[in-house]
Length: 61
Image 1 (spheres, one colour):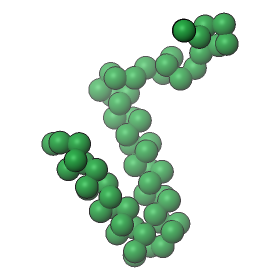
Image 2 (cartoon, one colour; image 1 turned 90 degrees about the horizontal axis):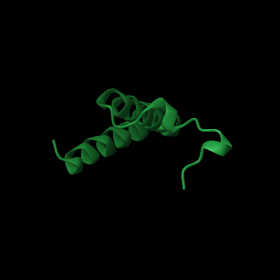
Image 3 (cartoon, helix red, strand yellow; image 1 turned 45 degrees about the vertical axis):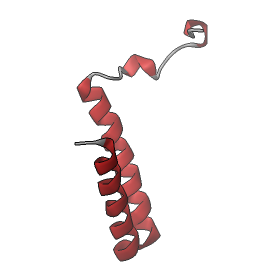
Image 4 (cartoon, helix red, strand yellow; image 1 turned 180 degrees about the vertical axis):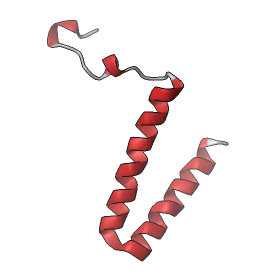
């Protein structure tokens, strides 16, 4: 599935949530979508947990 189709589906889901559930539902759907995106990236192996937690001395330049 192309990224354009995924974006269209996500936009439609947010639109329906905003229309039928109000702004609170819109924010909830957006937040859960972001969490699902991050979890999906972890499961695909694109990101590792260590990518988010570095000490100041461990920064790569």
